[in-house]
Length: 82
Picture 1 (cartoon, rainbow, N blue to C red):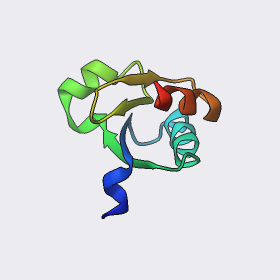
Picture 2: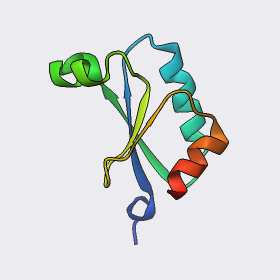
Picture 3: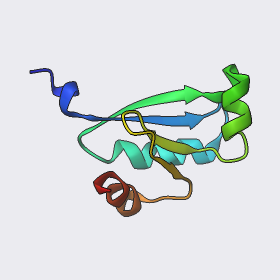
Picture 4: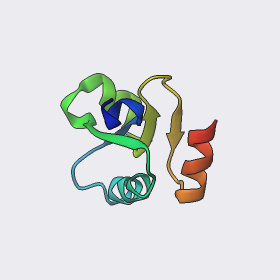
């Protein structure tokens, strides 16, 4: 079985030059069992409208559940459990 099949897919809505987005990415990458995909919001007007003032935002790909910044490793882990 592919190990990625068991991982929780997380989308991180971000944009180039966003230092908070870089911090959020670092927090997420500390968690095992997660497959991270960075989504550049500047490339999509609808995403820019939705997330422009909120980034970074983590989103579970399967459920759509979102976690807005700020979050640290313990908060991210708790969110994953929920």
